[in-house]
Image (cartoon, rainbow over all chains, first blue to last red; front, side):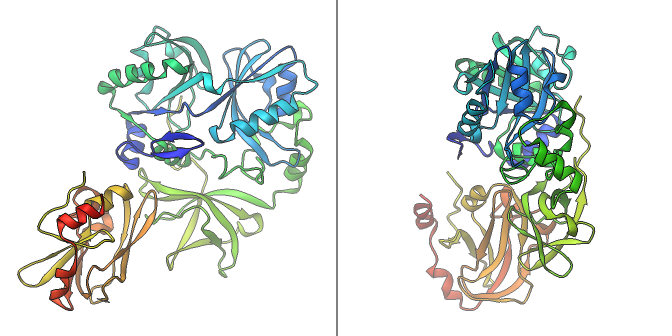
Length: 346
Length: 127
């Protein structure tokens, strides 16, 4: 167990590698109740969100979810988040646990002058993620809702095991699956029902360790690693969530300039062909041995059975070979466009 | 509770040692150590013929969580390293006292083994 943003959370139940494989091959249950939730409601909720985040929230309709980041005026990332449109003038944001206090303060500050309200609902929600190719079939045994009717990045309100839930076809593993948001007091009952039904589907309890290795293998950013208040979404390769044509938003001028001029540094993903893990903060070296960047995430992929990771590297160094030194052994970085493994998400 | 076989000797740094009748010692890490490290992904071992002093680092055991040095519980010359660990380091997790062994050592001074912890003392040490 480790302290994670004030939550006492398991890094692993049995084995990070076995839990990781279970999610790629069968399914896993993650308790992600630590995630934060904020409600944005009011006549100008959409206008506020368009000002706040980089992606285009006008594309949302009730039941639709959008992945985005929100930035500071200098372009660094406040947080990455999901925006759920529940109804006209009614949105729910899912934010990172470690950023709840900071995000809520930022939202309260930015909402000034907009006719809408921001409410921190984090303590009111539990959240369970059922992820993996058999996850949907498992959840279907517990609900009358037709899950086949919920497309990726869509949600409905329903009941799972008799517990009222927001049933969201999303996740942080690159696999098909669902994230179930329910009242905090119903979380244990829902988890017990999922576990009780999970046997025939090969369900494993899965912890933070597998959550991190799965998201890295899928190429998803983690706040504090690939995105920070010093790393912009353009630098991080998240240009696809930055929509300049929707009109100005916080940081848009800085991000547009970076896009036009080119980024000084880039987040890249790599593998090494070796099992030695290349850990965060390891210097990235060019052919002369000069430091041209640093690793921001690193683990072992139990699927391709080699070290994988991401690094923040000087853009000018990217055309030439890169390496790291692991306890005296030089390992060459093979740059990879993630995901590192084929993903089957719907 | 971790497994601490009565017939082995132990170092505070969580290595075990078993001296066979021919005076050759086998060295590995304890069940407590492998459990603390979690999934072991890489084991770096010395070359055969290396001469180790007691307490000297002889390799690195790496897990998803961290990389940790491992130490020679007594001095000696490396006669063999476990070749299976290169491809299957997880044997250290599944069988730390058997298939997960790391070194065969010819002890510099066979009497040194008596200076290591007994199973009972090691059990107390890991609480």
